[in-house]
Length: 291
Ligand code: C2E
Ligand code: MG
Ligand code: MG
Ligand code: MG
Image 1 (cartoon, protein in one colour):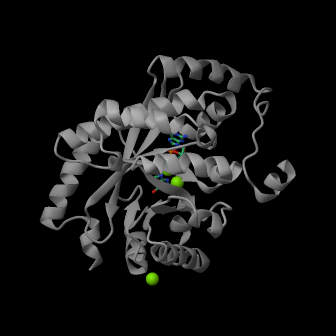
Image 2: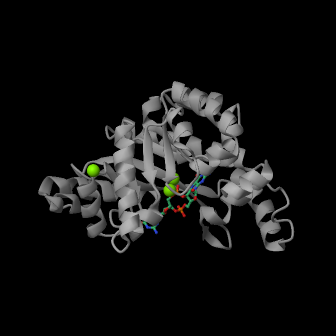
Image 3: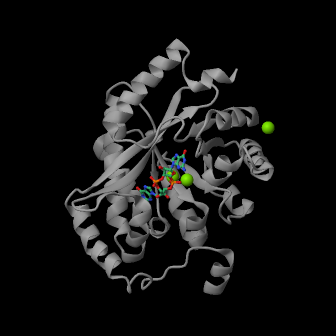
């Protein structure tokens, strides 16, 4: 099984993977404390409709405000949390903070679905659906304002368990999105049987589609495939107006990327949003240049 998984390029669980690195070990002890001491925080990155320019959602991206190292990015500690049993508490923190923020936007009369990234081990956590249900209930947040992003490789690590957990989450009314789509190894047969409502096209394709005809073809094909399956398509990694134009030509629904807005703390997000919405009214946002 493991050999097969490696052949497929799927993440293979290895509890000892970092045990030889003192730096990582120190970080591990600190991460445990960080979760308890509120050193984690969320940045938010907007998604917009390519057609209308409307803000359609926000992705919550975790950061670690480390007392001496400064702001640490998820690629430097989420994998560590995954390998050490800290991913449960980390995801719990992120879900809680994301639900609180979604509720605040909703209460302010500007409801916006918030997307949270799940890890491979969250998908075998039989307790996760109950936790999510309890959070939604505690904060009186409509389930439709929470979206969960899962990668193909996370699903493939334990397809049967993942399908069960995702089904229970979807039954709550939460949206399920396939993150980094195209970069993994899920079979279409498998995807078809999952309660998925969205594909997010992996940024590697989106960032290269200007120069690379096959990346452009992949992006266009994923848009068409997803639409045939009745899904919403988001392109991540939109870094320039040319990419936005190309995506519009392919009929892609939504866009997320540095060209629109970087992931930012909530205050900066709100500032961006009011300027941006004002921009739409004045006809000055990038998407209105598409016509
Ligand atoms: P992801 O979910 O695919 O998130 C998108 C990443 O691309 C983010 O990096 C974002 O800052 C970056 N990005 C957005 N727009 C652009 C762009 O136009 N160009 C480029 N080059 N990059 C762009 P970030 O925040 O460093 O997160 C990296 C990965 O860490 C995420 O990839 C996700 O897999 C993971 N992650 C982030 N937050 C969480 C979390 O709360 N829980 C878990 N389990 N994983 C998380
Ligand atoms: Mg994501
Ligand atoms: Mg992604
Ligand atoms: Mg088309």
